[in-house]
Length: 206
Image (cartoon, rainbow, N blue to C red):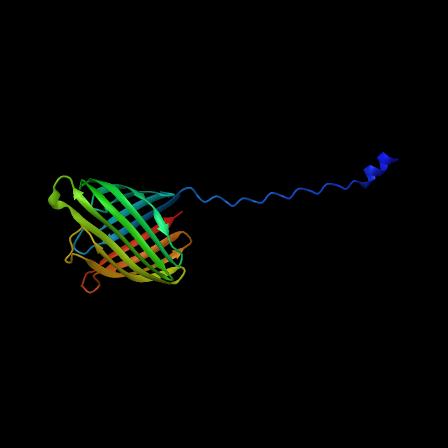
């Protein structure tokens, strides 16, 4: 009787709580691919492809027709980023150029984002290892406003060595649109001259 009573008085054990689902891990790698089509008045038109890969602090990049036509470059960089309302990114890099131009190039990418505004710049100095007199500074900068999530407009400037220009620094306008991970941007440099330079960029990030 005592045994039966004690067994009857026992309560069923409570089930153990289900383990909480762990957050999905962040992707270990991110990639980007861009092609810039240059329509240059009285010069050779060309396509400039760029491929990027990032993993935490590591930044890798490959370009063609960027520093010079018929020349390629490979880059190694470090990713630094921070901020909240005012977000910033800085990527110091070192690259090697081969092909029509041979050289070594220290470079820097940077970006500031606040509200719907973004300021970005990409600069490098190519040290020509064949003839130091052909060394040059390259720069591409943008200031853009995104009135809607999928579009942006702004101004751009570039100093290039890939083709001859009447102005050392070309200035112009940009307009772009995005859909998911795909991007399209058009640039018009030196819009005040009869034949401006037009650049159309198509890219994807994943």
